[in-house]
Length: 381
Image (cartoon, rainbow, N blue to C red; front, side, top):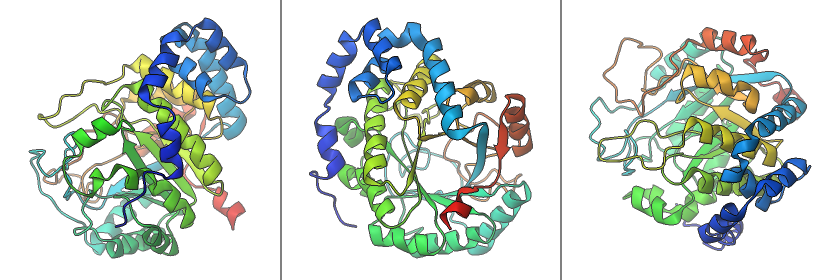
């Protein structure tokens, strides 16, 4: 693994927007700033700060209408469906907030799926109608080396049109190897853009290298990855700060990685090991404000919504910018082919336990069309 330079393009942009500058912008934002932001076709970072500020609270309905209009304009009435497959729950990093972490105290079997077990998981999900899948591992290159990831991607491509990974950050040539095996997407959360907090919660392992992780998406795009999904783990730091920096990161990637489609996720840290106290968990209202602000700032970016949130909240969020939803998820290796096996350690508890068919029905009730297949590939080819 190579270490990234702190003088990387986005690191320089991030350095130009320190927390002190952002706090000042948010503190002095008023109703007029919010109204100006809502009236612009192309927003500046200062406009995003206004939409994330307390001054925007009375304008949430106006923001919701704008977000709904922009989403309909760019994405129509479709919601894509996908499912995660956990290949391994072994992790050699020590992230204090994660159930997979080396010293989390999590109880359960730690294991890595065999190729035959990966096929079983794929077969079950394909049977539900899924055509998009996300393969996940812990931060354990020895338990799940790049050669193993490449084999897993190749197996998944036999069953699914679109295969993405959410694994440890890789070098560009390693992403290229996965692309050659059929990889289409990479999901990688920065967790938090606040350097001091990042250093405090990542105590050991390769994940401690903030700058290497920060530039991973750019490396993936240069390797030919077509879909880049990023996010911050909401609850590690102030939602408005990480949300602002996340918006800057997505806009930077839109320009630098123009051949890749960008999407955002909004995972809230609802469950954590006993040793970690969540001090910055956003409320439902704050989560809505964050999503609306980023939709208005980034109208062409996809929004992913996982089963970390309850079924009731997920259904209400559908009209506010969501374009992809997971369904019927398991966070245990082997969780689909062995539904009665609770021995394997899970990363976190899911909140929306509905089946894929039930989620699809809820999408239809909201007036949208659930989409199981990614038709973009036909245009790309």
